[in-house]
Length: 201
Image (cartoon, rainbow, N blue to C red):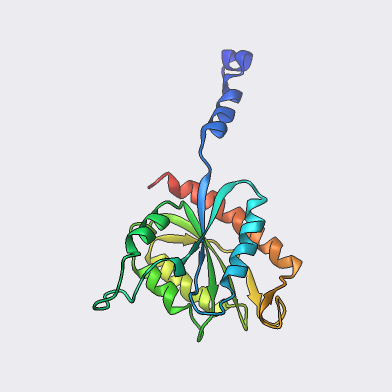
């Protein structure tokens, strides 16, 4: 730092200016199930409530069920929701996927929704919050491979909710306090990764 920089404090003012003018990141919380009786809205709302307290990004719930996305390439399917789905995903700088485990993997609806897009996913970061009989761990591992192919950088910390200990009667979310800590630790990684990847898009 030069003499005049020290005297007039120009070096100190610059980071503050950048901080005030830099727009907050957009982080989409994607509900990965469309089945009747699904638990993903509960989990997504819980994650958003924790995330909003941080004030470090704009967190939005994105529900796949709100978009008409028939099986990709299906003849005669009403894919009228595809354009809106593309816009919703493209507007995000990063993601939190709410992934439930069905038959040792992610849901068909989530896989289909991922397959509908390509560049909209590229060079963004993501965290995964999973749930299931074993915390949805196997679904999360399958999802990581798919995200890698889509050039989405998934972070290490992974909140895994058990249907036996984090849900009352397997139906109402009653997450243990340690799970909330895990969500915040995950977001502590998603935010800087999303910030860094934004610079190369």
